[in-house]
Image 1: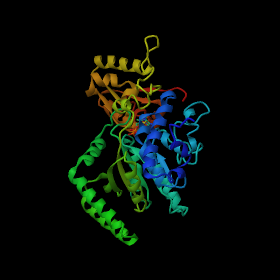
Image 2 (image 1 turned 60 degrees about the horizontal axis):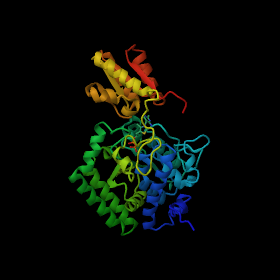
Image 3 (image 1 turned 120 degrees about the vertical axis):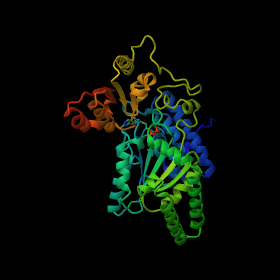
Image 4 (image 1 turned 30 degrees about the vertical axis):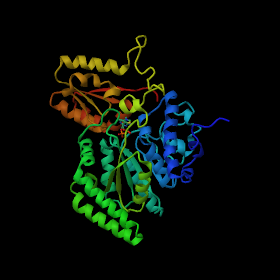
Length: 431
Ligand SMILES: Cc1ncc(C[n+]2csc(CCOP(=O)(O)OP(=O)(O)O)c2C)c(N)n1
């Protein structure tokens, strides 16, 4: 008789099966789910580190919420492999990203558990808000709607347009901030520093813990006491936190930061949050690549590593060999560096893709003339226009598919003003 290496995972076809598991089994399930992802993605390449980082979050969400009635919207969707595996697609997961196989991203046409089609960053909050408002209109008042967004995707303006709107809508939207302090390359910008500040601020966390404990203690006394506790908590937070917390200032109730790898604690917290009305944000700290040492250390390479040896972590064929032609992006990167050495007005701009676009080659040698502006293609183009109008020569490098975000900026801010911005598009193939 052979024993399975995934005894619990094989019992979980759908999220309803999670609800039958004991707490210690949920912990083991997370380990099996993680190993299953490592096993399959090492030989059938795809996104990797992001899914490992949200294993516990995925299990906690599907344990607490009643999907597909409740809606989980994954931002970008490159982290949703665990979600796919425990929502009926374990047996076909080996066909991930293959011809006639399943998609590497959530697709509503593929599964009713995929609440929204994704791929481009920063859409989750707007989409979730739309779903929440429509659900309210359709009298589905008990439906829970959750957006899961990474700290990288939060740098996109669209995410803030969503937060700004959600803060005045009376829906019970829950935004989960999956904060791992990295996008593909290290995350950039003031928001990143802000998130680090609130994670490490002792005074802030003491207040947060006191409020949270108070809420927990009183809520055990019954529904009226719980409502009272929520008012107290809200009052306290309004008083102390509104001016010091970005999300509170946007009318969100901010919870956390919590350990996004403690599945049982997350289940408790999510259960509590279910009963708290209005827009809420739960700040979870996670590690990208969690559980696979090489992916934890080299997070950029293991974002989407291609094939790798699951025992040694060695990436197979990640670099071109001498017999292979140089990669398009490297020709671009070295050529730009060459030009920039000769012309001091040249600057390089990338929206969060320094490694992917090889702008990193110039960044390493001339950091003062290269700008990673975050996942913000619209801003990248208009920022370039501003540089150009002052006589700089911006090389604005954007993957072709993400350039779609900036059409208006290309026309309105660059072309009509006849500004000298050099656009460099790559990944223009058939995907
Ligand atoms: C509009 C857009 N620009 C760029 C990308 C490429 N991209 C895919 S994932 C990613 C990083 C996302 O970072 P984060 O949201 O923090 O998630 P993590 O991978 O860290 O879990 C980027 C830049 C994209 N998907 N969409």
